[in-house]
Amino acid sequence: MVVEKVGRKLRIALCSAGELYGGVEQFIYLYAQHLQAMEQAGVIVILFHRGKLSKRLEDADIETHVVHSRFKYDPRVVTVLARIFRRRRIDVVHTNGYKANTLCAVAARRAGAVVVKTEHGLVETALRPNKSALKSYFNRALDQLVTLALTNHVVYVTHDLAGRFRLIHRKKRRTVIHNAIAPIDSCRTGKADALDRNRFNVGIVGRVDEVKGHVFLLKAVEALAGLHDLQVHILGNGPLEARLREFCLTHRLEPKVRFWGFHEDIHELMRGLDVLVMPSLHEGLPYTLLEAMYLRIPVIASAVGGLREILRDEVNALLVAPANHQELANAMRRLHDDSELRERLVRRAFADVTSRFMITDMAQKYVKVYGSVLDTARRSLDATCQ
Image 1 (cartoon, rainbow, N blue to C red):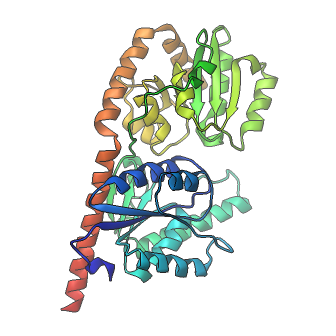
Image 2: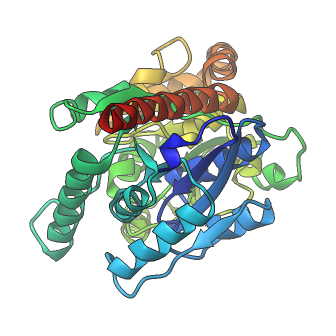
Image 3: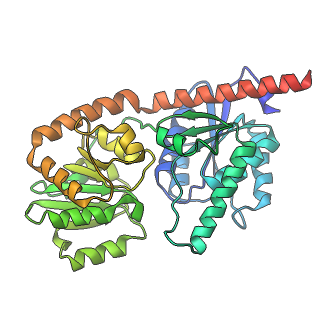
């Protein structure tokens, strides 16, 4: 078994679907680069879709295997994965997302590797029962069954998530490790100049979906009709975009709201913002938040999940009640009118993110978990052999 091998470089397989490019994919990309640079660890990445993440990993010279399947839980994929794990002498299979966990955990056990899983957030489900909601429920149930049966250790990106899974994972070894970022390049490409500096630029970044609370931002904009220099930037795309455009048309907000869609150079656009808003209904620990803190952009966020865990009202951000557009409007007006408040918030936010949420510390915590899991597996193997 792989767990018997000691005294050599730790070999890790990071596994994810890789279909979209959101928080999980950002985690994989940043973390894989850092692991590759570490002397005591080596890394490969397993994906099930070719896309932006696979391209970025390959451009960074990170060994990436895109394993295609005929259907979601194709058993032939498990055989392919187990072969890769054995050939690359993988010690730890680190899974992210339900499909990666389900297929890669089974393959890891066949190959003699241990399994560490990260819970990044809650699965979105439809408000009313439908085919999509049933599929989501099935996928999550299967994921948790595999977690209970095959996963050696579960990591949560926030204490809030750890609490939500406390009962179902009560018999598993568990740890909270917050997401973290790498230093962001200070070089500017001029993209920030695309935002009119004579306007008060408010941005929302991420997938345009109901849980992100875009509609509450638009209602706040409507409530701030007298704020004539306000300009809102919606950065990202998603299924709610058509409804938001219709809302802007119906409520005559088009001159104040700009839809940018998805942008590769998101940091450059963010640099032009006066405020970032995150009116989410729930969150894990979004990279956009940590990046805004690093880029010294004032943040207004809902007091939910990882946002409430990381941010302190009136200290490094302004927190508002979720689904409350009037509180959001009031906070936006405060930051519009008070440049000293904006400066005080970003100064503390930058100090917090650089001292607590940088990639080196996060990686060291994960490697410590890997070592602990491998030590436990070795002791269990020794006891069995005696």
